[in-house]
Amino acid sequence: MSWTARADGNPVSTWLRNPAFTGYTGMALGAFAAFLGIPPIQARTSTWPLAVGIVAVLLGVATISRGRKRIGFGAMVAGLVGIGLGLLATRSSVGNLNAVFNPSLIAQTFAFGTPLVFGAIAGMFSERSGVVNIGLEGMMLMGAFWGVYGADKGGTWVMGLVVGMCAGGLLALVYAYFAIHLRADQIVGGTAVNFLALGITGYFFFQLYNGNYVSEGVSTIPNVRIPGIADMHFLGPAIGDLNLMVWASFVLVISSYVVMFKTPIGLRIRACGEHPRAADTVGINVYAVRYGSVVLSGLLAAAGGVYLSDGFGGGTFTDNMTEGRGFIALAAMIFGNWRPAGAFAAAILFGFSSAVALRLQVYSASASTLFNVLPYVLTLIAVAGVIGRTVPPAADGKPYRKQ
Figure (spheres, rainbow, N blue to C red):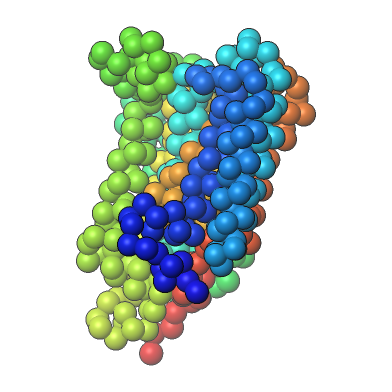
């Protein structure tokens, strides 16, 4: 008998019997157990994380008994991991905890996560139209180099942003021609684009800057200091003085959701990614939609690259500066199930992991490296379908031939 059949009409009882509610509550409690030992709560006894984690595990068991195995196992794993992390935190010194977990960690999380947000949203637009964009890494790298070059020669970071985004858009147009018009294998084509970008940026970096660091004095993307908040005790170091591109990433997530799910343009993009032949039948130009989506993807990915070099990097560039962030952005997009909010949450999770890993060096280098691996493990769990199966657009990666 299902849980709905056993509900007695009491709203509270109904919610408690809902396996989705118990499962997600267990996941939340598992995460809470991990945070009990760190600031600002900073419990110094193992009782609280142990108790909260056990409750999370029991909720997972109850969820499994009601037939929701994936969510139930997710709650159990969250509870066990929360117990382990919470116990480790209670055994750490207060000084080390305060050095790792302080308000500036929030600002650093956004700093690491912002290029991933741009890359993940970029990938979402491309793949929602039916084109797999493995070339995000190369487009981001093009934005990183040409963004610095544009800011250096143009004298302003605005010019750097424009030049960098145009470079990423042009590379995306080349990739779109091979993937859409010539119907080449999109995985191979995207990989070739990545190598092409690596060669282009490496060549011009050597020709224009002799392979050295970009000279000092390059106009960089400014921070936005919020009056009243910047001087506050906790919020000031956390969000009072963030880079302009960080705030732009928040706007991007909201606007991309509106465009993709609340406008006719978004409906056409999704139609081309789900059933292009049906979209063609009703008069939608599938080729034009896919070309536009891939080029937009390149523009957004390049914007993330510009932030990486001319914002977070302080106006510098080094060979292969992106270091795989385009692939991490793809993982964030998959983790977020091809939706803006999910992609944003995954990108911020990846950024948080990188920020914490950098700070965990106060304990040991091995602990730092281990924590840096966490986002990839979570991505594998998500792709494997342990916590809700990720479902790509039906025509994603399938070339379309007009008949």
